[in-house]
Image (cartoon, rainbow, N blue to C red; front, side, top):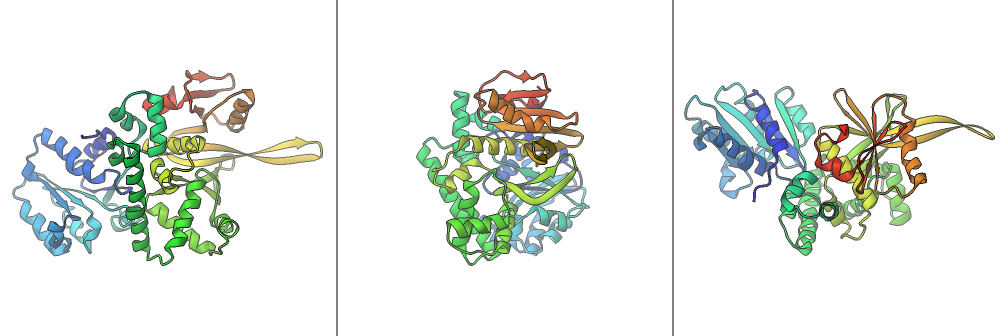
Length: 416
């Protein structure tokens, strides 16, 4: 079964013939290779491109081992450029080739070559893309299936589908599995045999046990404010083990560079500046987070927040954690209070302030979720995304309340 990924297909189509190296990055096994070699290649054929002008090279395939030599790869591609018509060169796992940037740059000024590559998330990092292809690379970030993509395959009762999505996530191979046992076993094996192995091998980590414990701590506290010092204290108090904060800071960097987790930085909304002391971390896929904890800590309020965060990233927003300061009068003097806005979302001139709430059972809960938003005094839209069915509501104080289902399933949901 082919799962349509129209958002990313359209991004590739828009970048066609732009004279740059198109670089598809993202979490391993989220569908980068399939996007290029199947979905995009099929679209090209529908436009009349001959199959002989679509050059697919999978460098993970043992049969292509000789092409991991840069000169062999260069010679092979040259041999496939048979005429002046555009050839679409698609290379999977380009990081397996030493000096691969020289190979790719060799085709930048050739009118009959349009270049697309993917790289393993743990080796081919966006930071490397920016350094090695400055001004010549065009990065497309691919995420696991969004809920709307997932639901287009699964169908059925949407509430049950969302629960399943929050537990098992949106990795394409998982969505196509029928039994819960198969999903669990696949995700646990994927985490251990692919992601941890990549991080350990790339960064030459000697104490894998500390990395394992560290990932467990992060998985247990998604959406919580933390930093390397706090995490080191957790190791000492819970694990009874001292670990240098600099070691944990490096591990955080490795994990985020692998696209396994994302960092949301705190942003002072009134002061218009970033606060680096504490950050929040979210998993790129909830199923992987749950697999890390052997599916023992299914906390829907935190998972809902993670799903909302991932959806915002997939919609090309940059997402921060908002902080609003307010001086409040107390009987014994004034006190500065800090209010948190779950997400401050920016895309060009667009900005939204968003709170994620699994349930709002009474007026007190409504007030709790609204207070932070009401302390933001600018004119940008303020939204509460509710983890249950609700019609779209516009409150008297200017807050919009929408259900998680509307948010995830409607492209213009933030403008409802």
